[in-house]
Image 1 (tube, one colour):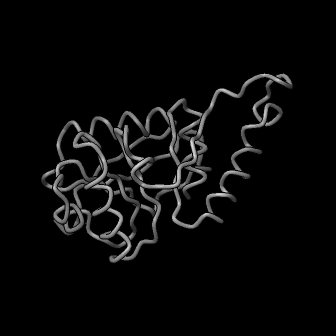
Image 2 (image 1 turned 135 degrees about the horizontal axis):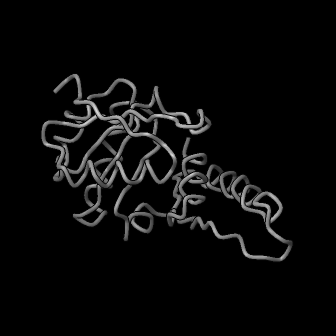
Length: 173
């Protein structure tokens, strides 16, 4: 999911910073994305510069240093989500929104474990399909504390990717 999201966001013109704790995974992502961004794959003349850019970094701190929005792609397990949100919460600037794909965990509970619960939002992973139809929809789950600014930033991001964002309150809230 991380590669596809990175590819889609970069093609939409967003600066993307990709990090993985497993160097082998990062290398495979680099090779996959290099092929996707070749001039031929983008329909550009040979030798021309490809517009989309993805920066590969070796630490979470490098990845989130300037981020307005961070989307993790760790396994949908409570320990993994708590660990990554703990790290992101401490390393990202205070303005940064934390988005996490999940199929079964409560974003309300996860957000309450951060210092920025108003800046946390869930991506309903069961509805997450980057290869969807002409007007794909993306379901996003908010908490009672999610700020209007967070909703607006995330809505704008997904719309620029070509998705129609739908919002619902976390059922566990």
